[in-house]
Length: 77
Image (cartoon, rainbow, N blue to C red; front, top):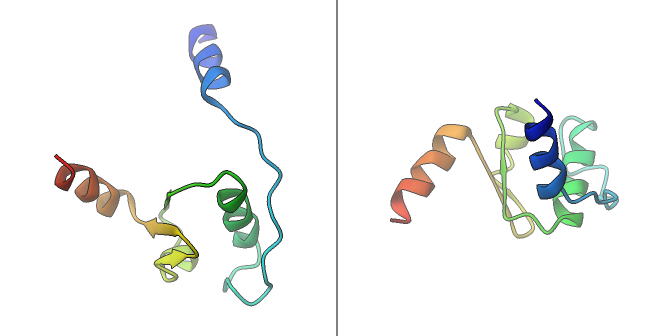
């Protein structure tokens, strides 16, 4: 367990979520997810959250299901 925690700490970047417009998400709780992804300069959000998936993308960030992400990975070969 300690090795796992050390691995996660070594690979983690802590960011402060950026503020985004209130009208972007159906679920206001998802604004923090999008703001965090923007602050971290994320390329993809992998989620099962239907309120995020319906957006398909936000700015430069793709929003995909785990299955869709797996397909993207397989096609990059």
